[in-house]
Image (cartoon, rainbow, N blue to C red):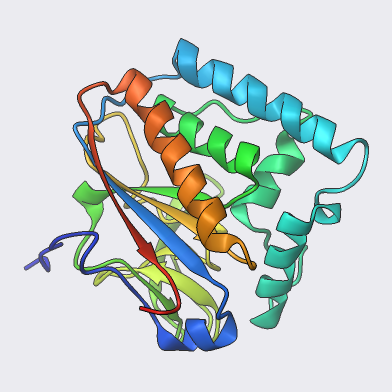
Length: 238
């Protein structure tokens, strides 16, 4: 029998070991219901173009790691043994694609990707229909299942001991903090209820993440005018 998902905001938590490693870490969670998914919209296309232009201007011919917001995620990854060529934070991966063009996936994903680039903050979106139990950010023991795709075929990978992962009762939902999401909880054409996760590091992490969350809610509401949103901040004092 599948484990019940429960209330996604109140039951979410962060492993104390993550807090010890990065006491400056903040997660802002958004629980959205009544979303209208679908292909890239006029609104999400406009946001992506704005994000692309801003990223290209910020880079000014340099490298993404020259931006302090991205460099701090490189340092966070290196702390649990991941080199930049092995895996990059989701926001670095997006910024690297800005000049060639950000991906157009679907209107929900497009919007959170655009906000991620505009605010230089990793953001993920989870379809709660695929969730089992509470969302939590933990240090992996090693071997936790992670369903993904390799060479176009579905495979079950495993987390490595010591890496920081988002997970639920069934397995890893996002490896290496915010590097890659599992297939099971990806947003899709049928998504109506989602959990958006905004990961923040640094002295201003909470203010930046909460401001980005407000932007994300406002932009999602353009194509989903009947959606309802609730938020929760997971900071070190909790």
